[in-house]
Image: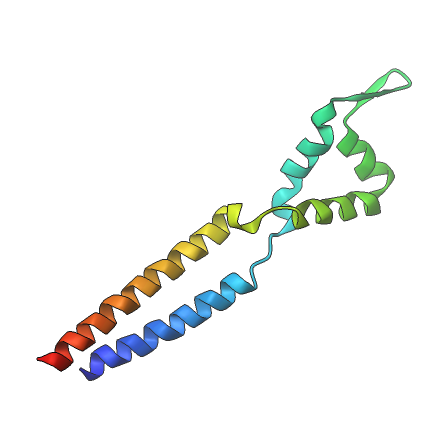
Length: 113
């Protein structure tokens, strides 16, 4: 019975750590550059003096601060529940919670015997 209680204690600590990881999850802007630039370029290319440029390239080159601020705003608008890494963390938490329930049931059965 002691080992089951130890396992329960360990799983509870893992759950707490996983929940902290979920609570502090942030999307890395560097992981979103491609989709951000795709959104900037979605209206198509821009012609300037007979030359063709993508809007993302223009903004990045002409005003890097605006580009960075725009990227951060873009990332802030992303629903983190749609991010695969966040979903993976939630799945791991669910698995730990299920394991805890199983261990608690096992402990209850052992105590009833």
